[in-house]
Amino acid sequence: MSSLVPRLPAHAVDTIRQFLRAHALGPGTEGVVVGLSGGIDSALLARLARDALGAEHVLGVLLPDAPFPDPLRKETEGYAHDLGIEVRTVPIDPVEKAYRALLPELADRVSLGNVKARIRMTVLYAIARERHRLVAGTGNKSELLLGYFTKYGDGGVDIVPLGDLYKTDLRAVAKELGLPAAIRERAPTAGLWEGQTDEEELGISYADVDQILYGLEQLRSEEEIASLTGFPLARVREVSDRVLRFRHKRRPPPIPKVRLRTIGMDWRE
Image 1 (cartoon, rainbow, N blue to C red):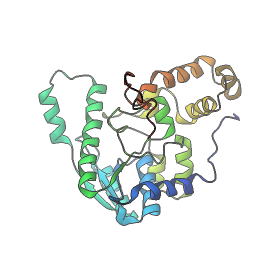
Image 2 (cartoon, one colour):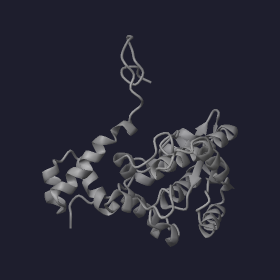
Image 3 (tube, rainbow, N blue to C red):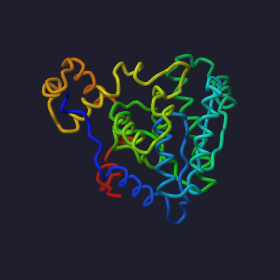
Image 4 (cartoon, rainbow, N blue to C red):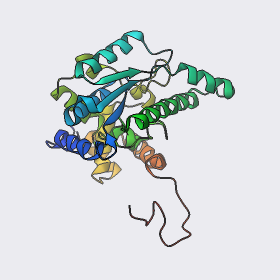
């Protein structure tokens, strides 16, 4: 067995709960808004937020489009009700159709998927502002490192409570907390087009890619990671190159240095 399989730190769940309490409750902040998708990431975040903040401080928002399966919508709403949190469903089809009418030349499914992700985030922020809450992102460490998110879409959030946990960590926590099997076993998908799945699009399973990412986190060489995991060196390099290629998604927009202290460079917040 590979020695690079990430192991969930014992303090992880407690740290995330403390993080949520520290950031989401206080003067002018009355909790979080979580975009619910039916997947494990958003379901786990909703559960952790409920446990940390109390159900009254968590609002789950489901943002289905036309292809979103009605059984999944009902299941997701039911899960939120079981948690005891408030849930709101806002179909995004009218806005999506308006975008298509405004920019009929948009035909690439990735471009259209990005538009859909940004529509969803716009809705979440509109609701969050009215409710004096933070938008809690559902991204995990695997997605963030791989750049597998939409810039200013699902990547445009106030806090990222799961951002230091790999996808395989989330599965371990979800099992530990007893999340429904249907949620834990569902194929991960960003839901940006019909039939899309994360692992098919990435070309590698999360179980495999997390080992490579964990090796990179430990500053191991690509050759050492290949040796420890048994993966071809070319596959390791492919993942390593992707992490570098999408680092712009993890950084604030660059600003040319003109004055003494520059935002994002040497202006300390």
